[in-house]
Image (cartoon, one colour):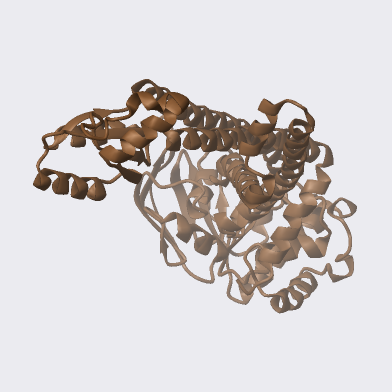
Length: 301
Length: 226
């Protein structure tokens, strides 16, 4: 747009925030509180997800190879393991490796196992780490039905717990976000509604002189987005401070357990841009949407 | 040009605003629309301004066919007309200059145009010396002249004046209508709604009388208008 309008209307929108200082302040406060809760919930989900992913990666399924499997079946199985999706990594444990490991576990009593080299009863196996425990059963049944496989052992309870925890965390995260976005929308659109009401005359005149709806909305959308941006900045610094504070507190304790927990927390420096971008987008998005909603009925002239 | 062809307007509650109206107003005409309140004058104007939509029939205004006009065409239609209201509708927080410039700013007119056209129309309505005044420092007549300047600043082909003299005293009223008359002389179509017969008798313009949602009479001057 080459005309005078855009600049003029952007200015009008920003002026209007100052004009309604008290109400703008109130909505910035409430919105930044919403964003903080949102941020805490999101950070909690992310950290929880990270921790679960770690636990997940520690779980493996073991495919035991039948004693009587033919060379052909063993080769096919090798190819099957290599070619199956959802596998993070795998390791082939030969009969000899298995025995050696068992001996190590026995430690000083390993002499009990001496002589087993001749007639090793331990089966060879593949130890497989999965990418995603959600699909563990599919992977397990693939191997159970393969020829040359004796049995497949897998951590059934752990997997089920982790999967349901993961679902809970993401449902919880989504629910919190939905609730607080809704609350923010109501707050912002209420503030803008006041401005709209104060300026209904201007809106009315704008309609009659042929301003487009986009143009009429502009100052209000600017106002809403600006409020959203300010709230986002406040929330960002608050969450940053809070996160660091908790980290430092945990580091400062003597409890070994808490310290190891802090180790698994994601450092803020690694995610700050996500937090900032998330806040800015959510804040400005709800600001803009709230404005559009509250001005809608005034555009019908 | 405005052309009503068998236009009816029925409001959602079932009452008739207009019943089967046929009328044509050519470019450059000055037309008084006369009628008591509730006769259908407002509906007549609202349909032209596209504030209300026709229920049936055809309505063409400045080349726009209003039955089924697209939402994004409405601003274009409105820019082809200037509207003056009974209650002036000036923005109290803006001075005279800004009130007039507002109409150009919100239609994204270049700065240079604004600086040229606002003083021009303020001069035309004789208020250039009050450009910095606020609306509440002006008399009713002066406020209406500011509103007229705002309606003119877009160079519209049509001026719609909805009882422009309703809120101002008689001498001032004359001044406003004189001004509309001289604007008409340079080619702008004027459609002025009023119920003041006194005023109409001073001019030699076409008079359309609306009653009960229909055109009661349409005469080339006031003499045998009802």
